[in-house]
Amino acid sequence: MKESENIGKFTGRRVVIIGDLVADQFLNGTISRVSREAPVFILRHDQTETRPGAAANTAANVASLGGEAVLVGVVGNDANGAELIGSLKGSVSTDSIAFDANFTTTTKCRVLAGQHYAARQQVIRIDYENSGAIGEVTSKALRDHLASAGASADAIVVSDYGCGVVTPMLFEQAKAIATKREIPLIVDSRFSLGEFSGATSATPNQDEVEQILGDGFTESDCEKLCETLGLEALLVTRGNKGMLLIEPGNSPFSIDAIGSSEPVDVTGAGDTVIAAYALGLASGLSFAEAARIANHAGSIVVMKKGTATVSADELRRSIDDNSTELYTAAVTD
Image (cartoon, rainbow, N blue to C red; front, side, top):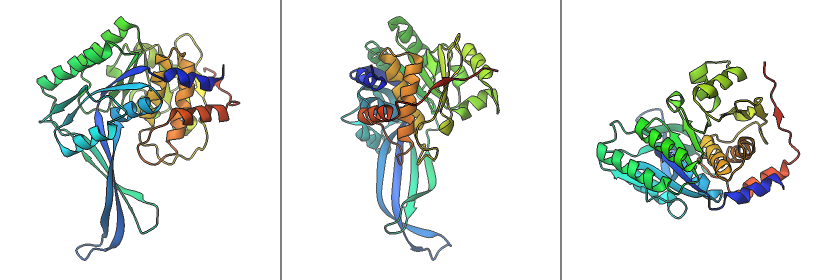
């Protein structure tokens, strides 16, 4: 069977994504003149587009790849929260999203500027973040939503961007559900991977691993980290150097990057990777098979501008077009 045929197994796989929901906004404007008030350009606003970011982007990618995405998270009763929910309608189940009047929807506004008929370039990013802890009423709502959604899940993804949604209690609940249902639990944590032990797998990028192991970490260090976290597999994404898959008892598995070594935009690439990886594991693929597919998905999305998704057809084409690529086990020191 061709490897690309595995993509067909994604259809209907139910993936529950728990985590921080971010409204990724892209404010496009045209530089019109220099201000009289200060030596700065005046940007005339053209349009603002809101796309799903962080855990919401993972859910959007699960849906675009043919899976059934159920999103568990929280937004504020604010305009950015409404825009984020609107960007997900029709593709991702939003019934398990809690609304909290005391919560500010995390928003990352990227200002893109350029002159007439010229490409827009990002000049600044403005972040709006929630400063307070999530209240007990909302926390209970999240636990209830997770219990309901997890009862029919084929995989659970924890997407922790440090915004306070993924508490130790919520993670332990996800772990208990995954254990009971014998489904994969995959973790992506921006700052706190060491606090999420006992999952099936994790997908940190190189920077996140360096936060734990320090610069110049080795494959042996990654093997120890995998063991320390009690994972069945650790998938380290390394940008244009590809991926490194660690499975206890097996030699480290190095996967070369696909396509161009110069990405257009890496925004949200990790969300796409974990979406494809989770769907692969939910479909019964091995860690290596799921990682190879995720590698293709990541290589596609970094060639798109802004927070983006990958379709099942794009993924099939990438796999078929690169069917002769070699994946070699890395030699351990």
